[in-house]
Amino acid sequence: MTETLRILRPDDWHLHLRDGAMMKAVLPETARHFARAIIMPNLVPPVVTSSDAAAYRDRILGALPAEQSFEPLMTLYLTEETDPEDVAAAHESGLIKAVKLYPAGATTNSASGVRNFDRVRPVLERMADIGLPLCVHGEVTSSEVDIFDREAVFIDEVLDPLRRSTPGLRVVMEHLTTREGVEYAREGGPDLAATITTHHLVINRNHLLVGGIKPHYYCLPVAKREEHRLALRAAATSGDPSFFLGTDSAPHPDRLKEHACGCAGCFTATNTLSILAEVFEADDALHQLETFTSLNGPQFYRLPPNAEHITLRKGAPNEYPSHISAGDEQVTVFDPGFPLHWHVEP
Ligand code: NCD
Ligand code: ZN
Image (cartoon, rainbow, N blue to C red; front, side, top):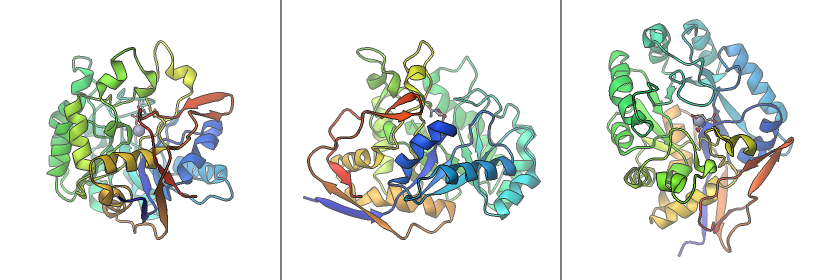
């Protein structure tokens, strides 16, 4: 039986760090285990221009504890006013590694997102020319479409036409939640990939809704039926280069999660690697953990994998905190509902 696992240091290809006191609280939780992360730009106001991204990167590095090292991989929030020249210059200088597409209204802080895709066509064409990936929140937002169907409908009605009309555009389908998404990503060739979160490998919609509503399991895209969770598990543990870890760790204060209109987002930065080791072990796939957390992401983003390693060791269950403090607020750490035996060695 495997008791230790040495893997290249992981990266997180989808992370919400927020700003201010919240960022100060959550950044060390990620930097403890991860070398780099794609930083989502959905602040209020969003990170839209290259100068917004440079300022945000400096605030992140300024909040990083002196004893930690971490590289934020910045993104821009695509709006209908985004200037292709600004995007290209930010890519050329190395400042940004992707642009994020939020359909307007799809999720937390997405009001400035895209309504009319014709208006972002010049940016997308420029991105295809320069090889800059588009990270896509893949849900339609029309009120007629059931929330559980929004990802599958997005693929057919928005993503597939968009990719056909922009040949060469490199796309990451963010936080996949469906079998349809897995199949589409798997068959999309070298210009298409997908991130999978930790929590979507663990919970289905029953965990969210049966026996009382569990606000800390509410995220977007919302967890689907068990068959979809199993498709995600199979994809993540397969070693297929189309799939890599993007935790979508998305902290919100508990008072806004435990609320009549609770915010979407699961905070998983603290215990993600222990959960993933448990999940991969349960599926007899510990040998694929490094591929999912540390190799497939850099390969898609055309970056070298990290040089350092981390070691996971199996032992008595971990004592992770149930909450972390962020200024005056508390943030609940995602509870996978099973004991975590894998420790990340300091
Ligand atoms: C994210 C957030 O809180 O910023 N929430 C979530 O449920 N995943 C936004 C997002 O990634 O959709
Ligand atoms: Zn997200």
